Amino acid sequence: MGTVSFTVDTSGVEAALQGRADRIINSLVRRTTAIDESLQAKITGEKLSGQVLHQRTGKLIGSVRTIPVTNDGATIAGGVQAGGGPAYYAVYQNYGTAGPYEIRPIDPKGVLVFLLDGKTVFAKRVMHPGLPARNFMESTLEESRAGIISSLQSAVDEA
Image (cartoon, rainbow, N blue to C red; front, side, top):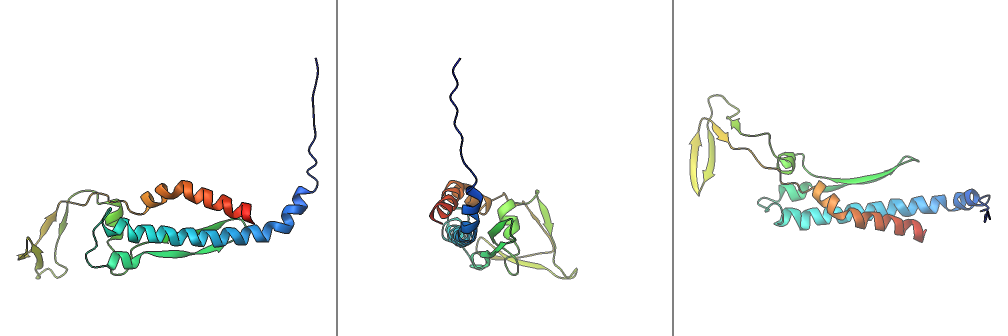
């Protein structure tokens, strides 16, 4: 029986990477920032501009922001978030509600006032049918997954 073998000298790999580690990490941080900005643009420019939800007040679109990229030495992290403040309802639009729910005025002696088919309606309480999930966050990430991986690999290759 014959044998063919070979060896790979890896003694210089660690030293070579040590000299390039900072450049690679900085490249990944910059690329992660760019990816976050791209995700934000896709969410606001597509998902919240008619593809998933139609813009009415601009509050939800205005709440979409990138999370500053962090590097703790072992992990580079970034992201995009939506909601909060006047767009508190983002979570309900994205994930939906568990089912029908009752809406009552904050003041027990108060009344609800809203428009329905162009007419002003007054009510002591309303049974809302619930909201279906209209995922605009995770769907954007999933649709962008292959491009994100490719972009991060390019950042490493270029560095």
